[in-house]
Amino acid sequence: MKSLLRLIYTSRSSVPFDEASLENLLEKARRNNYHTGITGVLSFGNGFFLQVLEGPERELVNLYSKIMADPRHRDCAILDIHLTHQRLFSNWTMGFVGEVKKIGGHYNEMLDYRIVRKDPERTRNLLNSLLEIVTE
Image (cartoon, rainbow, N blue to C red; front, side, top):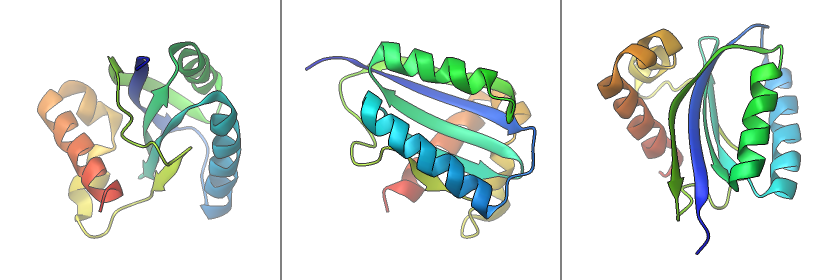
């Protein structure tokens, strides 16, 4: 089986995102990801993005370069990047998790890149919470 790259990053929104803006972003991402073999999940809350992307290395590096150049993002920070043989989100060209009420401020607070960049244990907890949410 061919290796895939998994990249997890967080960034801060530099523009306000309402429901329509997020839907537009997701629609475009799903269409583009379908053609490039990328899967993943996007989470947005409190003005912060957290995204897990997985796919062919070249396509994933190109996509992350575009994200870093996108004026809607700032303070991009890679939390984890590694090769894998198995997708976590094989059926999602781009899943979405918004602000999460059921686990309250814990998850939403952790979207803040300043927290996760400085605390690896909280980063792992955040990613585990995200995986629990999307695999329920």
